[in-house]
Image (cartoon, rainbow over all chains, first blue to last red; front, side, top):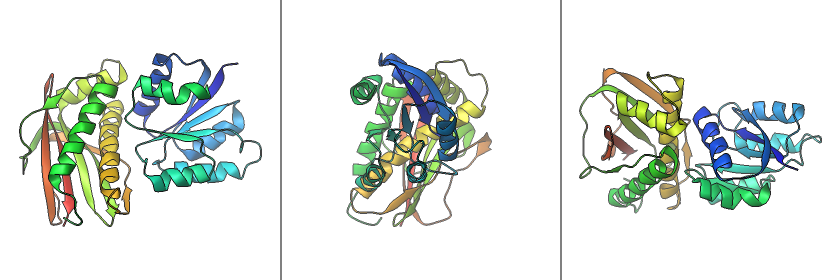
Length: 123
Length: 158
């Protein structure tokens, strides 16, 4: 069954680009939901049926690392996989994200081909 | 500048990143427009996106676009017509600065520098100057896009 995706990024431009790249990559997915920061993402996860989260790291209010930490404390949503899409791809910050359960990371900028290669197996 | 990295090394990587962002995401062909500049005069009818670097290396990365080019870039980025500087334009230009700032952070962090990146912000107006109060080393990289020149500016505190 096609997976519902939650895009978490404070940039509306980037949410549109990721959404477009998913389509251009020809991936099979269901609904695309959007959130502008970690707090909005948590609320969306509690409310909607979401199968995978694609999240930025550097965001206002609640960043991607804080989002992962908080999600892990919520039994109903803690097992939903999160994939990081960020300009922040240093070993330290990605290592921290993975230690909190992130299943992978994609560096911005990216191309639809790269999106297909990295996210295709997860869809 | 602290550490063992030179501006020429930073310049090469930022040029590569800028071209990658434009060809791969903005969907616009650009090229380097000559040698790096040391200074830029007042910006006229332009928009600037910027991110700050904090930590062991303080500084700023900024991208300066004339208005029409900013509209063209945003239109190409988002696949829609854009006629005025609005929230979409500010967000798109800020995100270009953010991606380049992330690259600059990676270049400096690879040399063991613990650096934090600010959220992007934008300024625009009919005429303004972009300058730092601190003692900085700076470089300005000019690029040619189909509808005009734009600049990537890097300032690193000494």
